[in-house]
Amino acid sequence: MSFENGSISCRFFQVPHKLPKDIVERFAQRAAPPIKSMGEAPVQGWVGGRHLLDVPITEENAFYGGYLRLVLVKAERKVPTSLVRAECMLEEFAHMRAERKPFVDRKTRSDIRKQVLARLLPTMPPTLKGIPFVYDERAGVLSAGATSENQTDAFRLNFRNAAGCDPIPLTAVTAAVALGTSVSEWGKTSFSPEVPDSAMDETPGLDFLTWLWFASEARGGLFNTKQGRIAVALEGPLLFTRTGEGAHEMALRHGLPTISAEAKTALLSGKKLERAKLLLGFGSEENWSCAFDTDVFVFRSLKLPESKEILDAASTFQDRIQKLGQFRELLLELFAQFAAERGDPRRWAATQKEIHRWVTDRTSKR
Image (tube, rainbow, N blue to C red; front, side, top):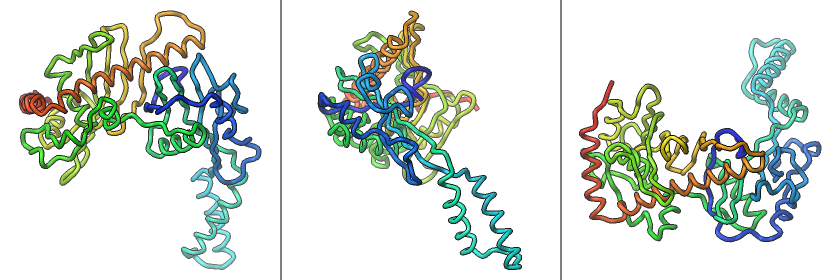
């Protein structure tokens, strides 16, 4: 995954204040060590944005198209599982012949495995994994390829150590705070006429995506934004979630899951939509699509509108980052419209009745 071409998998972060003027020097001080000097232990460090061995870090490789662009690299030696298994079997057979026994006891087997790993590990070439990021100083927004919680934790720690500030992940909670409200004031809500509000947990992210699904079907899927009128649609695969008794998750992947009987059953049982394919568009010209994991606001395989012009590499990168920023702004505008309804008890009571009718009356196919 990269920000230069193809689809993008990322999450957004708000940087609380401007980065220091010596930011390049700060990252350079925490650059990844030379691979040749690497021992058996994994190492992490920063490199430039051109490739995973792009050191030293300078102004030339730290910035691209006017944006700060770097990669957090982790280098680690790993022995393939199949090789470990084969080498262990060789050692075990040799041990059985030497001891004239038809088996190897558990302790000996464990010792053999440790010895095999200790012998093979130093001979393995390191594997490299990178978490790229692009920082838009004007918006104060950082986009990073940290799509798991472990990656996010590692990225934030290393970024904070280098830049001196902790980037704040975009979630339903932080998006609400930016709007001057708190999701804790919203309370619990059920999208099912058969499940009371009191039986639900507070799940603002899931509420947002399920509300988007409802609005895309029951209200025509058209939203007025500062950028113009946009269309919103959801497609499968769908992942439904509800904590408590019964099945906690339900995944619908094939056919037309949005109109399936299983989707209606999931909604009636109190489950909400945690992940779906989200499509945003201005007519047929500018369209975005991605798998949206709303619990943590992670966007996977995000496809950006293609440029109508033939651009050089740097200009293409600028165009892509601008369209990535446009996608983020559209999403936040949609969330703001949801938050305005969700945070107003009278409006939400009326919306909840609409949603219950939508769930009850929706047609479904087997």
